[in-house]
Image (cartoon, protein in one colour):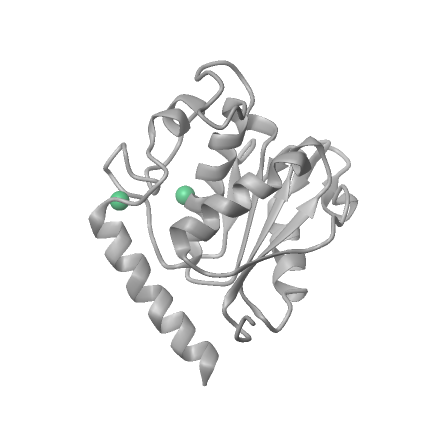
Amino acid sequence: MNRPGHSIVIVPFGGEILEHLGDVAESIQELFGLPIHIEDDRGIPGFALDPVRQQYNSNVILKELIGTCPPGGLKILGVTAVDLFSPIFSYVFGEAQFSGRGAVVSSYRLRGDGAAVDARGCPPLVSRLEKECLHELGHTFGLRHCSDPDCLMHYSVGVECADRKFSFFCPACRDLMLWHMASDLFLKSR
Ligand SMILES: [Zn+2]
Ligand SMILES: [Zn+2]
């Protein structure tokens, strides 16, 4: 049984990405070594739709996620297929609360050509989505952007950057992530 406060909660917000959520969850579980809990699909996040831009505000989704994180959740990650924006950017792959609890990622801008089907038979979109989920969760564990282009915490300016990165942290980011995780778990257990 999971101890309370120790899992990463994944919240699906509708869309075609749902069929690959199991693969995404598995890579999150592997990298962070924490139990994963997938919630029921909450559907398209209409509450975050900006009627003028016809895009979805990632700040609003983050706020909703943080406010609805179950007691057993150490981190909460929203996954969606809608086009996300943050007020100062024309679009974002995702957004996270630095050293906080919530993150949200979208597959919308991760389509496009490039890498072929991977060893699991998944389209390139899946591995890009996984890397962006791991990257945003890295921010919630106190990691900033990393200059190593192979590291998960390298800032992706396009899908090519996401394709180039490995699915793990460089040694320096990994050490820092483990340190932050230990302190988050300690604070949660008190
Ligand atoms: Zn980032
Ligand atoms: Zn790094």
